[in-house]
Length: 257
Image (tube, rainbow, N blue to C red; front, side, top):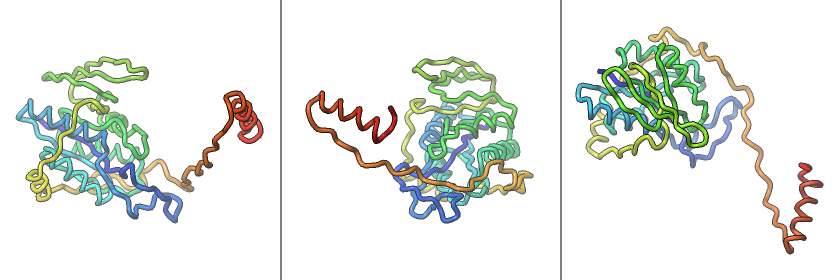
């Protein structure tokens, strides 16, 4: 029984992002790269499934430049059994990423379950797992908070706006995209971290998947950081004076009324 967990390596939220000189990408100098937090829930869920199904093996898969190997080693240290690195350029879009993941999984072996995070925290696109499921002709449920597994299906609780819960039952194989709160990801132990450093990570090229970087559908031409916000303006006086001054500022300076 083969279980896959798809991962993305993203900049730490505390990293200061700068646009590269070409205006088409970010400057990676000084950026700390981490395993996407939502993908940590996916890794944990795959390990919990394996613990209840001893015959299962977990393969972690990530597409990107050489640096993503670090994210794969994190997954191995947490408890995944093997890993695949799909060599993709930095500018690969969601379409190429999803297609490469689907083809790599197909070549590696028929999946029973595929886990992912509900989105990446860098682009917030939330597209890859759904597109990958389409390429694999598999059902997919996203923003999942709870899963109950049987031999041929999975019952899933999915969070929607307003805090309501949708309930699904889908046949396996399927794609499950984890939401925060699905579980509590474990910390990798030092012995497992050391073992993960020695594990082989299989590298797959686009050519081996019958793809090229020209399969990308989206390109960037002029990235810009948001304009810096002006300093906060404090209004003094009693409540009546503050209200009057606020209205004047909104009308004359902000020009929103």
